[in-house]
Length: 176
Image (cartoon, one colour):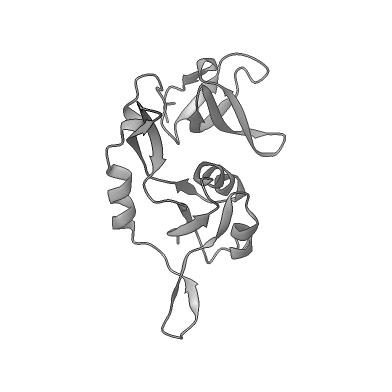
């Protein structure tokens, strides 16, 4: 059964951890963000910041050790360990997060997703239009500046590539 867990990341590496957890076998991974106004050198600017510093939420089946095991989290780039709480036995163990809490976080209106300059949101199915990967279908993971991080299935496995946002279009929903 799929469950959500909180994963502790390295400092300011939530994005990297999220992308790498997806390529390690997590069904879904995200970190809630918000746009914050910051004053640097007397100038105001808007920055995208993680709502929970050093935390990524990942969904996987903890009982399916064939596709996912706890050791993978510690060895995933950007991750430190899964957050644990003390159980009735007195020992720390990973604690699942209720779906209702995750749904509240996912439903939050984030300015980041309403940016008209970026027509995609994480998880969107897209198609690459230009370059070596033209015509390949991918999953949009996020962006930084004008570059998008994409998860593509290529040569028998998932790979993360970074391409300009201008090379991408949203893929139309296929009829079933």
